[in-house]
Image (cartoon, rainbow, N blue to C red; front, side, top):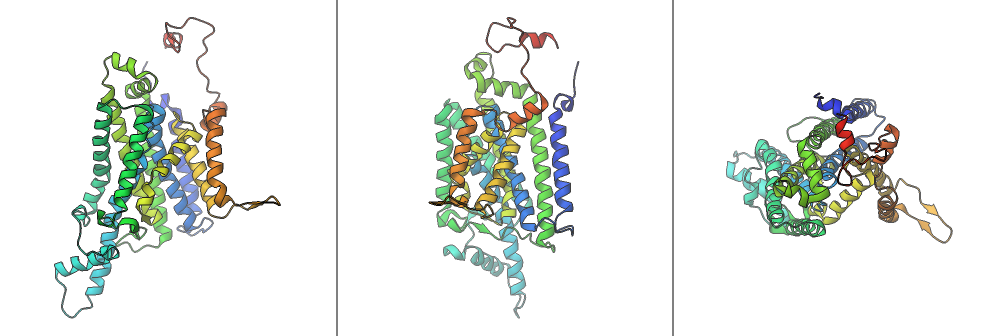
Length: 409
């Protein structure tokens, strides 16, 4: 008997309903719709958190289901932000330059406008010429394509080189971290074409849109929620079918999957590239809400944080990755934003701004040792999700065989 995707995955419908309800409540209470109970700055924080949840879904796909611990997915996240940031900065600067030059008695030529735009953007690094990578910065459509193409191509090339060499385990993690570090160091250079350490700024202003930040922040919140919902459905659909069974098999016993005739390297490359594109989409939505993107955002530590978020939420559970990321991200904002009260101990005062990372590290260790299922395990307890009962029967030639469960289908 065939069952629909939703029937086999009721958690997807529950997640989408919860996400829609959350978005509706936040929107009604926002300043953009006039209520003003939730500030615009916090709306942006929530929108950015939804974007982080989306990259966490990608991380759970590559790590929780495929068993590939990538410490470089924030590089794709940052590249997505850079690609959309180029258009936002170019178009905003162009409008300012055109308005300024329109005051001149002699109308400016196109070349003069381009020179003025280049001087405004690259003057901070001592240049006024547009690098080749800015060739399509004047086209929103092409830059949106580059949001997927640039990170996707980087992931494809890196993955092909790594997987064809059968690099696995901690060695692959180190390679992905090295890739991220190399990219960050390159972007820090002024001649990288992306303004070096200054990064791209002013991204929160949508060019040609006459709307306040109250309204714009809501638009991005809705876009982030929609992207998270679609990304979650895509991920759940992938892991519920044959593709999901194969990547889980690769995670559990790569040699056996290869012996069965599957192209392990192809499956790894597909999931690596796909999750890189999902991460890039998340970054393209995140940085316009943050207002700035710079090389520090791509530092390897960011990808390590991502792995910690997924581990705390419970890897191998898509909803766990979302819950863990949302919880830790919002808690981090509270602690590092100076909102958490200091704790006086008499001989010493705990300032959470300084101690937050220590608390996060201890939490990661505690979850790893004491609750490997993470926060998602609490959902399992609530829904009474249990492994199939074996009743002491011999269910197959190998540990973990589910012949009894298969016989009941």
